[in-house]
Image (cartoon, rainbow, N blue to C red):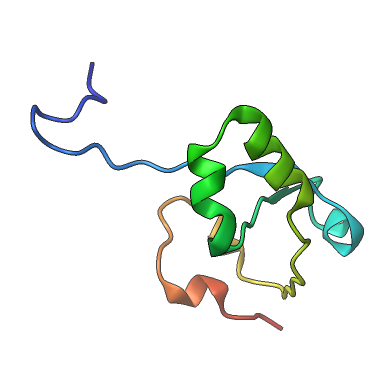
Length: 88
């Protein structure tokens, strides 16, 4: 019962849709976020399950880059832009 927003208020939430990682991303994790182009986002959200699956399956694999970051990233109490700064 604690998760319900008060009457008339919005409950803001989000979900990260993932897919199997491929290529260099496999060095970091076996899953990667599904990243859709803005042009297909509305169709993916409002289409049928089959249409959404087809869009996800045909989504281009983005070129990603990464660098080491502080171990503070793993602490849920840590917050702020410093968490994405590279460490040597």
